Image 1 (spheres, rainbow, N blue to C red):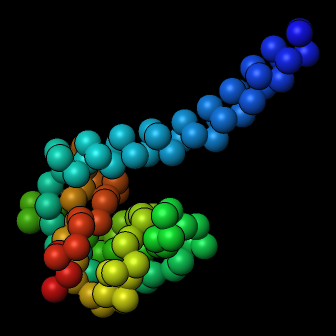
Image 2 (image 1 turned 180 degrees about the vertical axis):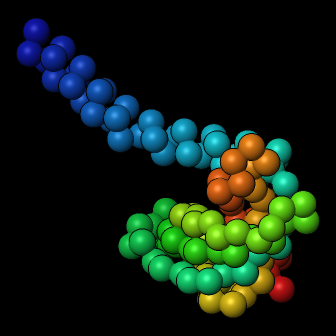
Length: 116
């Protein structure tokens, strides 16, 4: 009985260690999508990380963000993009992002319809 309890505790700890960073990133991104400031950006480079979420690829993108009240700067974002829109995320494409006014390097790519 004691061994079963230890095994269950071990499994819970391992699952928590694996899931907690993903949950925290999701919550931070969700907050940024609501409270972040929209800005145009240009995709400088795109790389597929090899990870998939519901068959959608996770892309690592280097961006040049051009906010109204700041000089342009480069940022990097790793985000899952719907397979329906992946082909649109190419170098030199213009997109809309939201950035954290307290830490402008924290950026998320807005949903579809933001590619110009």
